Length: 148
Image (cartoon, rainbow, N blue to C red):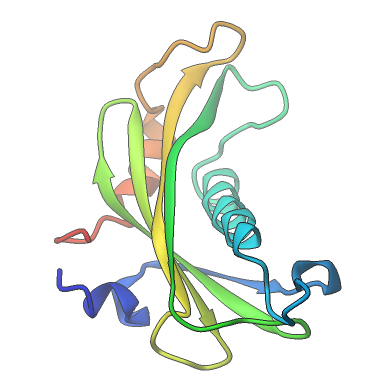
């Protein structure tokens, strides 16, 4: 997929609106760079809980973030609502790499985009395990043919 294609909303499979908050803005009047990772975490976990059935409270399997990166193109600010977008770039046995983008207003090109990688582990031992079948099935629906 071309670098321009990772910016296009049409190349993502799952969407979640997120309201920006006053505390998201930094002294320069736009959302601080670290806050984008919170947005990434929000959409990935929203999907796993709502669509994959991940039990974050008391489930045997949890997902740990092991890698992330973000490219910033244009500022986002409070007040406003952004649309976060999710897809799966790579699906392994125990890990998944998401492609995530942040869109402001009705724009079709991302203000920011990047990757976010989860490894699934057994709670308590923190040893990697195969992605549970229900979650894997949900993740497969988000796979794009050509990642970043």
